[in-house]
Length: 331
Ligand SMILES: [Ca+2]
Ligand SMILES: [Ca+2]
Ligand SMILES: [Zn+2]
Image (tube, rainbow, N blue to C red; front, side, top):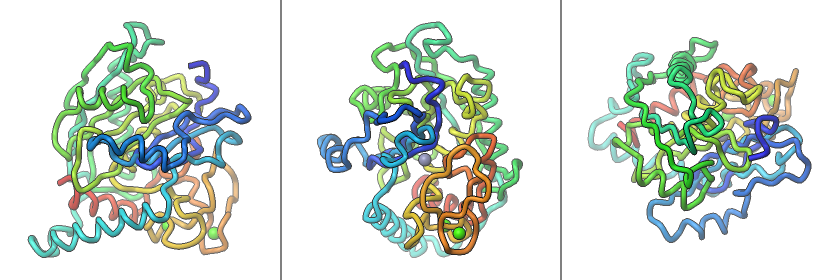
């Protein structure tokens, strides 16, 4: 895809409806991601298959490109439906197991098994053959990020690499967001239960940096995280090659919304300690404050769209939200 690496920018999102796609944005004017189709179309396209969940595309694109489209942005109705489902699941679980089911736990006490699927077109680096060392570094970045070692709050999660599965299949490369080939890939490769993080690496369609599925009541084969191979530490995706696309996408997989979800009004991202933000922040702006409510924009948060070098934290509220979701959906 000719759009790489200059177009790499994981910022600029939009929500399709079911998975989170990070767009490697293009500065190219008028560039529209292939999956930026209207939500209704997306939903219809997926309605035929039970394995297709509404994906909230967490597309990241370059500044100035598709920022108006945000194919990854959930509508307020979608957020409301998800929040209501979570509340219901929590209530049922508390009834069954007591409030202890949602009690705090020690940092990094939950070890998430990670199965990495390296999708390749051929055996060359350009064909997706990235070295194991990059994958090990990505796992390190996840562990540091979620431990709060880069500046943020510690979370309950640690990550353990379970296996690296290399698959050469030109028909799955690049990984095409929302496509039948993506579904075929996941149906063939996904392993483990709801607790297992399946991480798919490859070149991605439409300049995307990555996408992920949110947890849902019934975890199916589509569950997982897709990340641009060259966004891993040491990769060629300039400004997005420190591994934070992986961190951001796993944040979605653990139920976090973008910090700019809902803009300045309403419940926003459902987290009280992330100041509301009107829109995604790109690069690493100084003094950005887009909502009159308290606090400056959380541009250093992993769930915004800034450069990898600019994002380094989760908040205690996000850590709590992820643990709740883990207990409700994945434990
Ligand atoms: Ca917030
Ligand atoms: Ca503010
Ligand atoms: Zn996102």
